[in-house]
Image 1 (cartoon, rainbow, N blue to C red):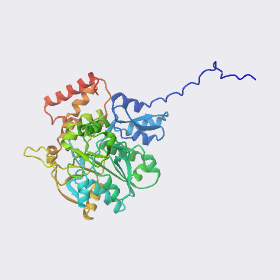
Image 2: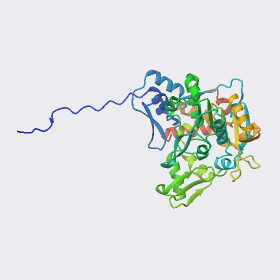
Image 3: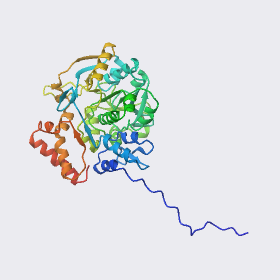
Image 4: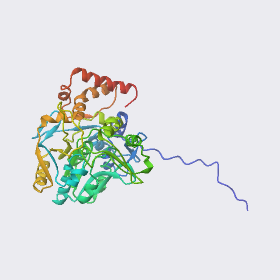
Length: 422
């Protein structure tokens, strides 16, 4: 009996067609506007996932075509495409946004104050939320267990888990990506994320009471931008630390501001100062979207924390190691209530703070906000998509800048576009 081989004349099956990319995601990609938050993946779970790009940032990957409703919701919620801020009955500052109260403070637990990047107030507030039964768990970002310079989203259930996650993580994170699954579990969750993460989640909560019920408290922090994984690798290279030998890495914390510290397999450590790690390396690897951010101060959150730096005689922040002090901003009445509760419960101590001093000790936030309008105008002139910002006082902030400085920012951004360096 003669055996015959496969029919070589039969046509090869056609490869599956790639899904039509949603218009919202296409616009984000065209303008390099992605913040990497994962909101689109929360809106379309299983159809959009987050993956690390060649540049070392988290970016959405669409695997299935979105419905028109999903595409429209991504367009409304995505912080890369825009943000709307309404002051309502709150005080509203041109640079710092709507607020109910502004204080300084720190965690009363010395270990938590030491572990946190800036006084541990944010971590102490999370501990209070759990202890007081305000929430059942906390969604936050911590070090990835298998990637020392990377991040992972974790669910913290107690003070020990919150302490383990304390400290800033200057690397990409997409804490919104799996929120649809967490929401389905039926727990009340506090959420901690970057200002863009908070803005996207607040937009989801405004559209859907189910989101609002699942995430009754949103917390954030002042953010100077998201560096790529290349930035983290550059820090390790400067430390002379082989990434394969690094078992743990802290960008900050364990002091104020704390040192960037790598722990090697042999138990030895290598470290550099915050000024060297952030100022000298990581800040040079920040994604484009962060350079045109109108809200690095978490206007959508209930509570925001930041560094309340000491300053020199000229008002410029000092980065000498000291006991940490947090800036604590209540953005909502709920936020002010929770801060007062935590203080009464003995979780935090607070002191008055004059908002007029903030521009001096947060020069990075100040300068980016004042330069933003010029940068956006340059991008518009070059035909690039830009975010739609409402209620963020772009013109008033630009007026705080000398004309020459605005022109330099305009020319610098236009030059980067023309050279293909966005």
